[in-house]
Length: 272
Image 1 (cartoon, rainbow, N blue to C red):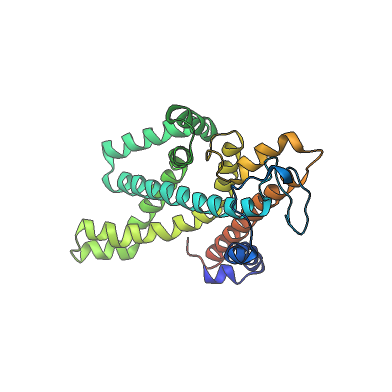
Image 2: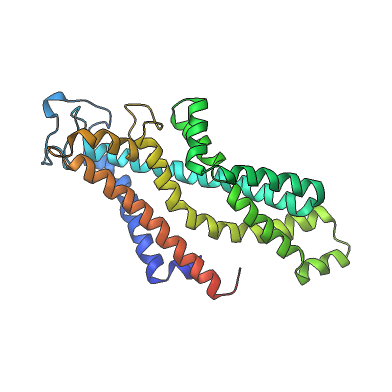
């Protein structure tokens, strides 16, 4: 990861992350109003000294809402990624280690999940549970783990045949210890590389479902929801569309650049 982050792509991604993190860190010092505070006198106000990025249709400060939305979207993307990655590793390693019927049953479950487009599955889960940010996170986790579970199984099977694992077996090391130390210890770093490549996609899916009104309930700010609210004001208040769009692009670009840089570094060093 250090080698990848030293590359031009990695540094550019880290720079974008640093700028966004700095914006969030200094936001309390900017004297911004509450993201949910309404001021109808400032309805659709253009960017000015009072509202640096303008105000929305309820007079809420766009900069304050964007900062809150960046924090919420970033945290949500990480939670979805960690949840889906954990399920993927557990299912993949258990399938590889158990083999036989257990492997067959788990892989058929994976096939069933993969047979349904992830967006359709997420929409169905949110429709079943009802709108809400927590339900949206659950839907994204459930619809995102299957593909990586198959990959984790392949990694686990490959690691189990490596010479140092065979040597551990011959030395009398217990099966559970080999599984926990060598197999899981080898699968997790490789899956983390895969996860960095998935992070940008998670940000986009999260914003897309929130755009459809399936994310946080008003007045909570989220980038996709802000885009959805801007549809009726594209001509007379274009900043309402431009600001969250740029934020989504920045988050996605940073995640993709860092993921590509780490992946290239790992492949270059022959660690996969």
